[in-house]
Length: 55
Image 1: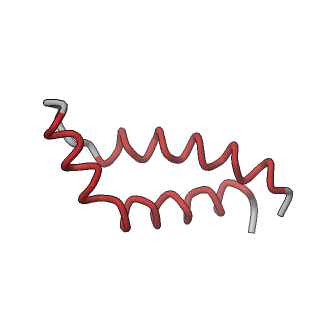
Image 2 (image 1 turned 90 degrees about the vertical axis):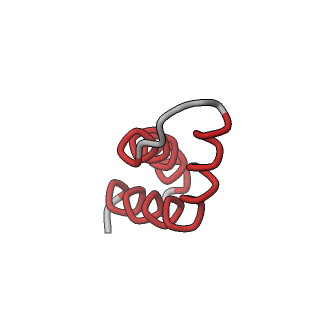
Image 3 (image 1 turned 45 degrees about the horizontal axis):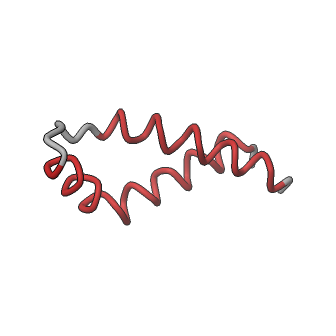
C-alpha cells in the first residue's frame, strides 16, 4: 500500500469517526458543513504525517 492510499484510508476513518463533531463545529461557527472540504484539509495533513512515518 502506498502513502496516498494510507492517507486516504485514514482520512475516511477520521471523517467516519468525527463526522458529527465536524458538523457541529461548522454549525457553531456558522459555516456550511462540506464533506469534500473537510476531506481535502484532513487528507493533506494526513498525507504529510504518513510520509513522515516511513511505513
